[in-house]
Image 1 (cartoon, one colour):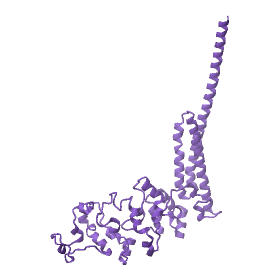
Image 2 (cartoon, helix red, strand yellow):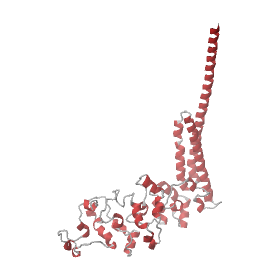
Image 3 (spheres, rainbow, N blue to C red):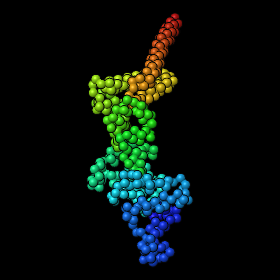
Image 4 (cartoon, rainbow, N blue to C red):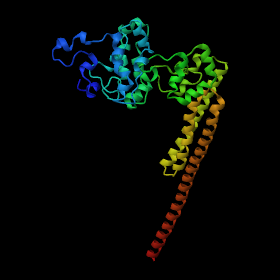
Amino acid sequence: MNTDIHRQRGFSCADCHGGDPATDDPTESMNPRKGFIARPAPKDVPAFCGRCHSSADLMKKFNPALRVDQEREYFTSVHGKRLRAGDTKVATCIACHGAHGVRKINDPLSPVYPLNVAETCASCHAKADYMAGYRIAHDQYDKYKRSVHARMLYEQQDLSAPTCNDCHGNHGATPPGVTSVANVCGQCHTRQSSLFQNSPHKAAFDALQLAECTQCHGNHDVLSPRDDMLGVTPPAVCITCHREGDRGYQIAEKMRQRIEELKRRLHEATEILDRAERAGMEVSRAKFELNETRDALTHARVLVHSFSLDELESVIGPGLQQADRVYRAGQAALAELSFRRKGLGVSLFFILFLALLVYLKIRDLEGR
C-alpha cells in the first residue's frame, strides 16, 4: 500500500471500504451495518471506484485535468455491457489497475503504463481456457509481440507506438468495427488514411464489408510494410483480390515496376557516388541532392494507398530525373578523376625523362 496513489493522496481504508475508522474494534470498524464492504462484488466494482472518480468536485481537488467519465464510458465497452448482462468474468477497474497498490498511470510499474498494457490485457485475453466461452481468438498478444508496433514500443522504447488501448480504447474498450478501422489507423497514419478514403478501394471495400487497412496489413501482427506487398507476384497482397487482366491488377503491376525502377536508379546513383568518393573526389553536394530521390521513394511508398498511377507518377518522375542528374554528376567526377590520373601520368613521364637527360649529361661530363 505504500506505493498506492490513494494512500499518497491521504485516503484511508475506510474511504474505500467504509466502516467506522474511529474505533480500533474490528467488529465495529468493519461492521457491515456501518457501511463496511470487505470485497465488492465484480458487478459493484465500477460504482465502487466511481464514487470518487465520477465526482468532478472531488477529483478537481487532486487533478483538475483528470477525466470523470470513466465509469460511464466503461459501460459502453464490451466489458461493461457484459458485466451488466451478468458476466462477472469480464474486466473491471481492478482487473487493469489493481486493487491495493494502485499506481499512477505514468508510473512505469503501473499495469496500465504503455509498456505494460499489452501484458495486462493478455492476462485475460491470452488465456485459452479463460476466453473459451467468448468465441474470440486468444493469440492477439503473441501476434502483437511480432508486430512493428511492438518493436517500436519495446525495442525503441517509443511510448507513442500503439498498444492495445490505442486501437481499442481503454475504459470503453471495443473492437474497431469494419467501417471504423481506417479511422483508427488514421489516428497515426494520417496521410495513408486520407489517400485510401479518396481511392477507388474505399467504395469497393465498403460494398464488400472488408476491414480496410487490416485487409492488407493485418491487425495485431502488423509488420513493417515491404515493397513486395505491392504487385502481382507472391507475396503481393494485391492478388488476393485482383486477377490478371482486371484494371486493379494492371495498376498494381505498373506501380510495382515504377517503384522498382526508382529503387534501381537510386542504387546506381548511390553506387557511382560512393565509388567517386572512395577515390577521393568531392561529391558531397551530389550526395546531398540524392536525398530528393530518397524522399521521392518514401513518398511514392505512401502514395500507393491512392491506387492512382497519376499520383504515383507525380513523385516517381521527378525522383528519376534527380537520380539521373546525380548519376551524371558521379560520371563527371569519375571522368575528372581519370583525366587527373592521365595528366599525372604524363607529368611523371616528362619528369622522369628530364631526370634521365640530367643523369646522362652528368655522366657525360664526368667522362670527359
